[in-house]
Image (cartoon, rainbow, N blue to C red):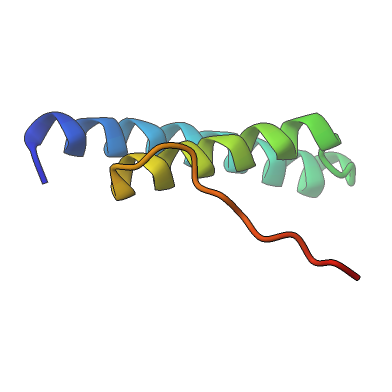
Length: 66
């Protein structure tokens, strides 16, 4: 993995870790679940990280037909 790609991955992981820590703190301290938008934001960051690691365009996901 190239150095710049590694740095991008590290940056994405740090951001995701911080977001998850904030959500966890909110659950523990306030007993509040994170808002849907917050969760979608973290999921989008995880998808971006996956795309970066795979070196492809947007990853396509299968949707459950049920």
